[in-house]
Image 1: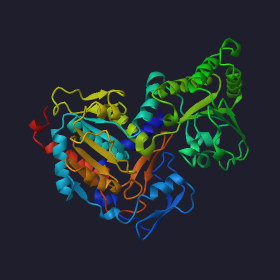
Image 2: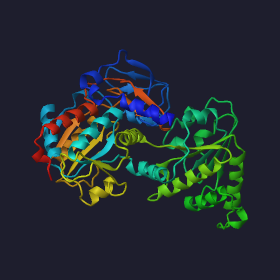
Image 3: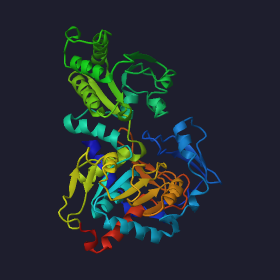
Image 4: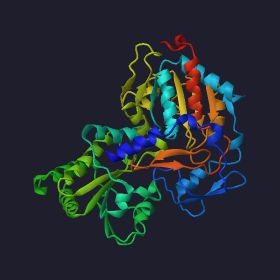
Length: 466
C-alpha cells in the first residue's frame, strides 16, 4: 500500500505541460554527467558517467553494457537538424501539428501504438486519447499483458531489487538468463555482496554472467523440460502433494522439484525471477499464474517473492501511469463521451485491443506511433491507406517520408538524452528522475501531445462525431 501511495504521489506531481521544448531540452551544464540514469533498460542503472561529445555523440566509457552501447549509437549530430514532414514533404511544426490534429479529429477508431515514452508523455497522451477515443497499446504489450492478467486473477507477491541484494539467499530463475536482455542485472543485484547464495536455473542452462559471483553456488534443474509440465508438477508439490503420487515422464522431475521445494522451505528469503517476454506464447500468462501460485504457497510458512524482468522501452511506466489515471491497464480504449457519441468512457480488453490483431483485422482508421527511446518503425501490417502520425526518434524520419501520403512525422526527444523525465524501475516500486545527457533542440512527447490535445479540443464537435 505504501509503495502504491508513493507511486501515485510521483505521478500526480508530474505535469506534462511543464515539459516544454525550451525547458526540457536545455543542454547539460557540463559535457560530463555523473550519476546518470540510463533510460534504455528497466533496471535504470544510476551509477553511470556519460560524456556528451562535440559531434553530439554520447559515450559511457566505464561500462561494458552492450545494450547501452547499441542504444547510444543511434544518436549523432544529425538529430538536432531533423525536421518535420507531412505526406513525404518537409514541413514546419505548426503545419505538422495541424495535419496531425486533422487526422485525429476525423478518426473514429485511432490506435496509439508503441508508446515508448515516460510518465509525462503518457499523461499527455492519455488526455489526447480521451479527446479522440483512442486505444492504448505498447510496443511490448504482449509481455505486459501476460504479466498483468495473472495479477488481476489471483494477485502476487512482489519484491524489489534492494530486497534481492540485501536479503535473498535463494534465487530461482525460471526459463531465463537475465544477462542476455539485461546485461547488468547481476552487477546491480548481487555483485560485491558477501552473503552466501544459491542460484538455481529451472528450465534453462545457467547464466554465464553469474559464474564470477563470489559466495554463490549455481546449478541447473531440468534444463530441457517443457515449462508447462514443469510448473504443473511444481505447483502440485507446492500445495503439499507427495512426489510419488505424481506422474512425470520418467526423468525424475517430480523428485528434483520436490528437493527444490524443500530448499525453498528452508531458505531465509527466496526470489523467483522470470521474464514475461522470454516465456513461450501465446499462453505465457498461464505460466506466470503458476509461478505466482508457487510463491504464494511458500509464503504460508517462509518469505518469498517474484521479480518479473520486463517493462522495456517505458512499458512498465506507461502501464503504471495509465492504470493510475484510469483504473485500468494498457489495451484500454479511452474517450470523452461528450465528444464521441455513444462511446463508453473506458473499455479494457487485452485481447481485442492487441495491436497485431487490430492491424490484421483492419479495425483502426488512424495510428499515432510514439517511439522516443529507440527507432522501431510501425508494423508492416499497417495498411497504406491508414493515416499515420509518428512522434519518433530522428532515425524514423526517412521511413516516414518514404511512406508518403497521410503520414505526419515529428521528431521528439528521448528522455534521459535530450530531455528530462521520469521512469518506473523494473520492480515497479521506484520512480527515477532522468537528466538530459545531451540536450538537442527536440520537443518532448509530452509537449507535442499537449499541443495536439489543445488543437483537437478546439475542433468543432461535429468533426469528431461518428
